[in-house]
Amino acid sequence: MISGNRLAWKWTIVAAGVLAALGAMLFVRRARSPRREFERSRAAIAAATSWHMHTVRVFSNIAPETVDVDVVCPSFEHRAAKEARTDGTLASVDTIKYNGHTYNRAAGQWVEAQAPASDFWNCDNHGTLLDGDGNSLPYSAILSDGMIQRGGLMQAGEEMCRDYEVVVPTPTNILERNYRFFICLNEKDHLPRETRRTARGSDHEDVIFYSHWNEYMQPSLPFDFPK
Image 1 (tube, rainbow, N blue to C red):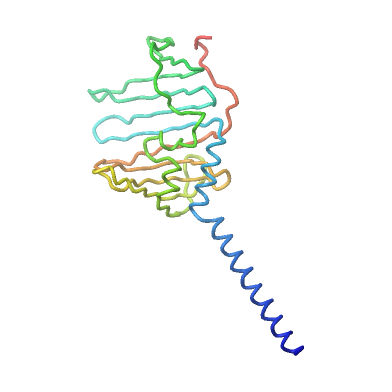
Image 2 (cartoon, one colour; image 1 turned 45 degrees about the vertical axis):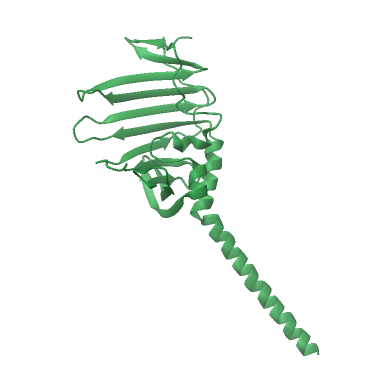
C-alpha cells in the first residue's frame, strides 16, 4: 500500500511538472507572439504624446515628394511638404494646426485659414494612428481580422526594429480583397519606426518613418508664428 501511494505521488509530481512546463511554454509563446506584440504597440501608441513622421514618395516621372509631420498632443500638428504640381514641379506646403486654428504659410507669412482643415491626427483617439499614414490600417482591424507574420530585425532610420507583414481582408474593396502592408516595431518601446506598402497597380513602395516618440514636451513654433 505504501509503495502504491509513493508511486501515485511520484506520477502526480511528474504530471504537475509536465503541466507547469507546458504552461510556461505557452506563456512564453503568447508573450512573444506577433498578436501580443501588436497589443503592446496599440497600448504604447494610445499613451504617446508626441512624435515625428517622415516620408518620401518616389515616382518614375516626377521629382520625389516629401512630407514631414510633427505632433505634440493635445493640440499641435505641423505639416511641411513638397508636393508635385500638375506640371511635375514641386510646390512647398506648410501648415500648422494649433489650439483649434489652422495656419498656412503663404507669401512669406502665416495666414489663418478661414475654414479649419481636417485633422492630421486625433490626439484624443490616436490609437488609430496608423489609419492616417496612408500605408496601414488601424490596430482594431489588425487585431480582429489581420494575419500577422513575424519577420527579422531591420534598420529603420537610425533605429532597429522588428518587421511584420500584415494582411487584412477587405472584402468590400472590389479592387483589393486583401490589404497588405509592413510595420516595423521597436522591441523596447513597441512603437512603430516604419510602415511600408505597395498599392495595387503602383510602380513604387511608399515608406514612412516614425521617430522622436514622446520627446517633445512643447510645440516648436516658428519665430514669426502669430502669438
